[in-house]
Length: 78
Image (tube, rainbow, N blue to C red; front, side):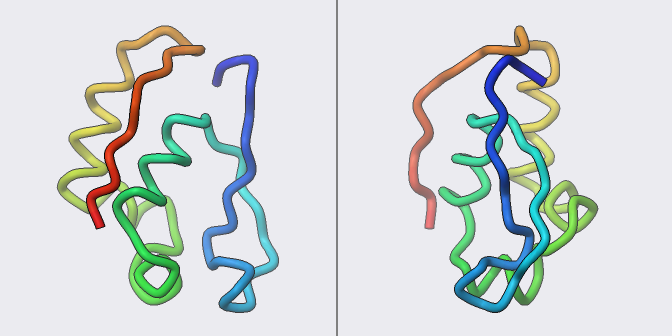
């Protein structure tokens, strides 16, 4: 992970979630650009579920070879 870490609530706080997971900022933006809070609560509240999603899986494969502090614009796909 890079020098900056953000905290992601796998189940959004607005949906009663309390746990937090450390994530890289670009990964955090990508999660929220692709899913609504309802999606995160119902279908994508685990790392395995997120990685199984086609677009997220492709993104993770692409970002894996980038430097730890890599940053790029994130498009909202919802």
